Each structure stands twice: as structure tokens, then as C-alpha cells.
Amino acid sequence: MSISNFFESIHCKSKAHCKTCRNLNGGQKWRIAVNGEVNPDFECPYGKKWLSKQKSKVKSKVKSKVKSKGCGGCSGKKNKFKELLKSIV
Image 1 (cartoon, rainbow, N blue to C red):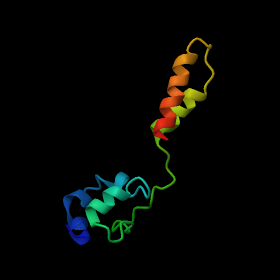
Image 2 (cartoon, one colour; image 1 turned 60 degrees about the horizontal axis):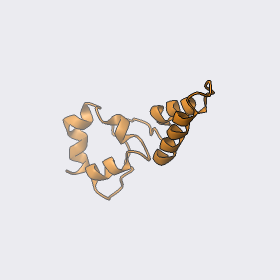
Image 3 (cartoon, rainbow, N blue to C red; image 1 turned 90 degrees about the horizontal axis):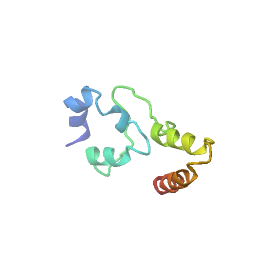
Image 4 (cartoon, one colour; image 1 turned 90 degrees about the vertical axis):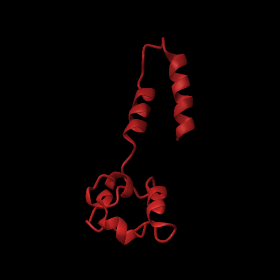
């Protein structure tokens, strides 16, 4: 599909994919799938801004939970959680 055809499609016009499409780093693979290797960082025809500075809500929630001080009884779970977090970062 050419990019101009995509812009005219229901997928683009409905704005259902804006969050993925406008994510500068995280959405690049998706934009390449839509537009091919040619200019994956195309401008939005509807004027949507890039969302490059947004952090993952899940990742920030996990980090805040891991950094919080508990009673000490769950330190083993906390360490496992830290290891899990390192594996996804």
C-alpha cells in the first residue's frame, strides 16, 4: 500500500493508529510496514505531533513499585521484580 493510499484509508482517517504511528521510536517498525523502508518518519497528514517523549506507563509504574520501600518481608519478590524489569529495559 502506498502512503497516500494509507492516508486515505479508514485506518488513518479513523485515527485508530495515531498512538502507534506518532510514537517516533516505538512506532517505527509499524510505519515501515505501512510505508516500506522509504521515509518511515513521515509527517501526519492530520497534523498530529510526534510522541517521542512519552514514557511507557507500565514501565514507570513498575519502577515506582520496585523503588518503594516495603516492610522487608517481600525482599525476595522485590529482587525478582528488579530482575524482570532489567530484562525488559
